[in-house]
Image 1: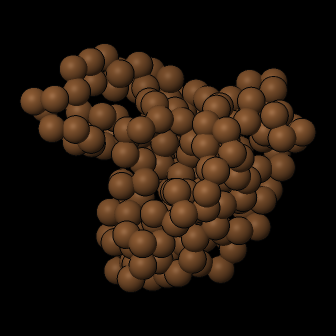
Image 2: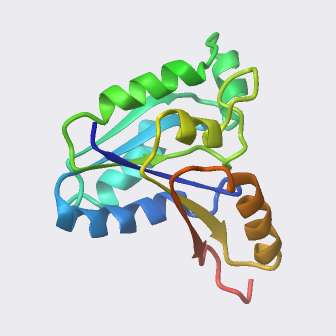
Amino acid sequence: MSKVALVTGNDTGVGKTHVAVVLAKVLSSLGPVRYLKVVETGIADAADSDTRRMELLAEDWIESTTALRSYGKALAPVAAAALEGEALSLKELVEETRKASVGCGWTIVEGAGGVAVPLEPSGGDWRDFAITLPMDAVILVLENRLGAINQMRLLEAYCRELPMACGFWLNEVRSQGE
């Protein structure tokens, strides 16, 4: 299996895909890079997917992009899957990610929503996913806005038990005057 970095954060819309693009650029100097979106929701048209955005923005830095699960409704992964008659399983998602990460220098795995979003009905989330796989690094993305210090401290407390390198990325999603 390649080295694996999870890009997650405190919320949806904080710029995880943008961070994944920058990370792909940096890591591509070390060897081949893959992008993997484990679960993607709110995808009525494949042209609007994070995998498609990654292909367009990081075409020179990535070997391939893959979405393991994609759902039409913009809901939490468990709810979006249930609407389409599926039940997500953390164990299955980890195994599919492990298989998709073979034979590459780095695999960038992008989460859906925030780090505590459940990936299965019993409540297993992205933190559990990172521990179970295991990851080589976790990047926690936060929007640079009022409340970011509080959000960062909450994320740090929630992710304290992660046994791998973990860092924060304060992302400028909107200009501060908005």
